[in-house]
Image (cartoon, rainbow over all chains, first blue to last red; front, side, top):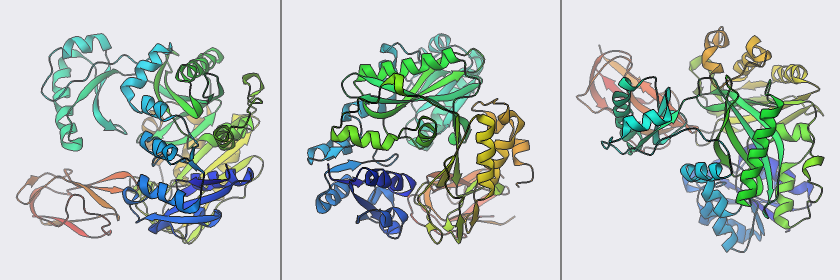
Length: 456
Length: 72
């Protein structure tokens, strides 16, 4: 492996380019017309255009990316996250073109991409899964009541084609069920063109905790502990940290073992994340899904383990001996916490805020502070791509120190030209319930009033 | 009462949920833009009847401040 094409943009493209350079590898960036002056283009040794601004015509076009790899003479591809990173056809196309794919086997991407199959695989690896029903197509509701009885109340009616919380409705008792199912089906039909729904047990005070895993592709796998990702707004993570506050050591260990068991069974290759729902009342955990790529919040794990996950991905793909990566040698120290800075306006109901970054100043990186961004002052933040413009990650000897450092770093952020969620992030991090570690996925909704006071 | 609904932000038109002649109530979502991979619903401010719709589903790269729906 000599030259790596990074099939992505923004901060993760910059992160991967730097990772390749640190290993002495050449780097190839790709860019849409909107990104020709972007930081990732400037950082790479060379850059190739892949199409117009809309991702569907550029970053998501497999042929254009393979074409750029051919033209540049790249011999490997790093997909980053998002875009084609979990697209098995892309992985296959890369491999078929004779290039190294810096990611898991296409079969693993397929297995985990199909949520139903992923659940079955998790179950066969001995991982608890949330009780759920078969699918009910539009107008075909025979057996619905019995299925609800098996799932148990309260439950969620979920649109099969839905995502990001759209088409999800809560039902507390049987008499409400039929009406809610019909309403959800009709909404799903209208929104997604598919009215299929299924039922799933609702966890009242759910936490979202995930395990970072790394598989060697031969049935061996290790974990790098957990990340707590419960602080979300509209199902979008905004703050992630590790260790997860107040998570009992036995739960943490059992979740890590479960995640590793799934990777072993799958003969998983490379970095991945196994996501769980944790019931904060009972302590029970359930498999949610597995992400077969590097995760946005991977720096949290890197900050407290000292590992370089992107370097490990690349080295595994190029066939290095990773003998040093033994479970008993992976240690986490202190506490790490990340905040995602989004171009959105808290004062206008978090309306996305594309525009010109007239001013963009972030604090300097330090041993206890990491800044990952793909944007620079003077950049146009377009509506075509996701709104994340930077990640700020702080480390401390304990949770309080890490939070204090993150708050101090956020206080130094200066952005003009686009609105950001920085004031909102500061509110979250300063909230007494957050400081107490009382986190769950409903945190933002529960504390809405205090979090928004003075921001509107 | 006549009302002009303008786009709040630049983006793509993901869904148009009304057509001329439709009766709408205050708060009803008229159309949804896709901006930075986020859905941005635009709702009616008052009850009325849709007089004209100036955007189309799938339309890409429309500006902020564009007259999208007229209600009377």
